[in-house]
Length: 429
Image (cartoon, rainbow, N blue to C red; front, top):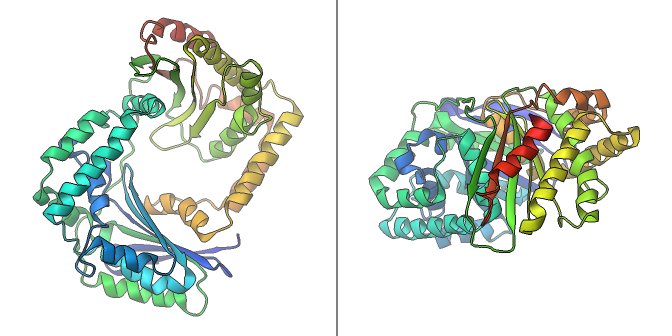
């Protein structure tokens, strides 16, 4: 989708990224606040998450959640929110003709929430239900345990639920006033900014910000993980029909170029129905569909493979997955493999950027963290330039022997930890 970027400094240090998408009928309005989990102590871990929920439960302009929701949805708009390590995200998708009203609603959401006792009690119960569901999901538990090893500040879901009991209204108000200040606000708005819409948006935001709280801008610190070499952990399950595993190769190396290379590597291995791992796992009857993931980040980079299958199939499937990862990393691929990987990857990226929302979610994370932004069109060029040798250089640079984690969930996986470890050592030291 054709677009241009406009970065604008607003009143008091707030930031606006305006993504102009000429001709688009929809718009995306995201507010990102540096108020995530990284800024709270373990005893109050769920406070940012609870605060995210309470943002929809009434404020000075809209005393009830029903009033707020009605005004959002009356013209077909959609709203959502989520909490991450550094940010609370408040998101709206709407018609371009609703931009002025959505801006008003988005500003009201972060301005003088009521934090009624009734809302706090209710949302604590809602958050408890949300986290309890994750406790029943073995795939979630398995992957979360890996992340905990890399980020020790993350606490167990059971303990996260317990923190809700000690959070008070005073705690919520104090954290809100500390984090929801001009300096921590970032607006990412993607829309057709013709007809002076950008000037109107900037003026509307600055008018709101003139009387908004000021404070200290939260810094973002990337902590390199420790203790990730040859780690195997296991948890029990309530299920008797399946075991779950997650194998992660970890690196502290960061380079933007690797984003494109790892994407092509992943597609050759497991992207699409003609990919190597997908085909082999099905042909052998070992899995409905193996999952893989990758990330190139400033704190750590990773490549992971995960699945759940019948207990008797889990070890053979684990061996197959690691053997194929090693084989592709060694460059045992054909030119046809590479061309399919490039074509599939580039095509999926090009198809993924057809709405203002796609662009807002692409640029927003980097912009909110004061990092360089990466044009998706340039990313497609990077994808098309990847070579077999580029993939081979991943091994030894971004993926190194002995730097791996295994997380298991099953009834007998604790007794099988050494079996999984031997397979991992066979391929990755």
